[in-house]
Image (cartoon, rainbow, N blue to C red; front, side, top):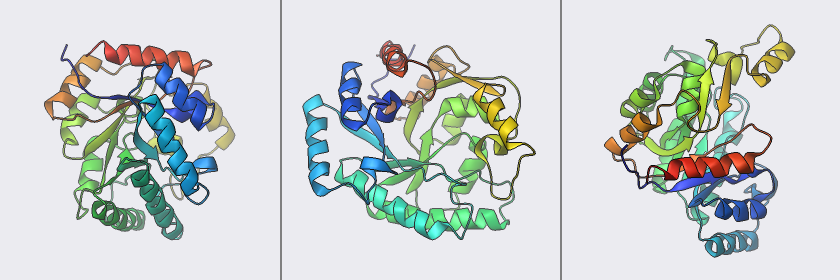
Length: 292
């Protein structure tokens, strides 16, 4: 077992109790930092006031917490639709501005599934949007971090290699790779080593092979039966998210790989399912602290 020194984060929204109470719970379970959604509600850059930003910074300081990243996922099909991209790009920039004000330089997001064909119009739309975001992020010494899972690590790296800066980088989620693409999360660390700036600590099991478009959607892709598909995803027909250490992620090898590439950033716990997320998150913090 390779000892780790990475700070441990939790996604405040996973507690499902609001930001301020979520910060208190994050401290209670022993986290070092937090990740917060900043797309809608009280954290929306168009809504949050300067006074609330100062208040939030004071709350973080009082709990001894830092922000590992903001979540800036705008939904839809990411940046696949060129017609939608102008407002998404502008809102993404405002979320990054807010992140910097709050003391972090990372915003995690989904950009849509990277297509195999680099000559397609969808690929071009994603590339153009990410180039603009990458340049903007680099001007602030910051990052938009794409969450892994919709495509293999190798395909994601090929896409990132086309951008002029690393302002668009990677939020590495080993469970998504295991559950959806069947990719090896340990090898993926080495493939994406130049781009990993943040990680999600999550575990899962793949139950059967599935086209990622059925899980993440894609521009112009219409599954035969939306309602049936939603029920299958919800009931765990294709994969199941499970507590850390109970899935297919080889944590010894995975954490050793992160250490090997020199990644010293956050391992931020994400718990998207379960009846008692606070209990599961506390157990996940305990699980990661065994490696210290």
